[in-house]
Length: 124
Image (tube, rainbow, N blue to C red):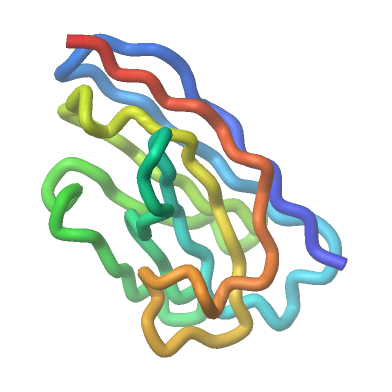
């Protein structure tokens, strides 16, 4: 069984930065993709960034390009999301998720394991 637990959320002012962490524990051998998703109240969950673990290839949503960076420490089974130049519209619950395979790494349907989320609030 795979467990994911996000941390690093909080409240910041616009223009600030946060770094989210997602350590994985349990059975991680077949995890090929780890993604970060977010969901704001009344909105659908959307993919923010994803990383292919073995190649470190990354995928970013247009809304966060140039501001957010996904990275990993493969040995620690941990994926990070560095968020810079935060905007009020980035306010959401952020989740990390794991997939064995993903045709579309920023779409949530291929992800089978999810963390409980960490709240990010950006004030103007």
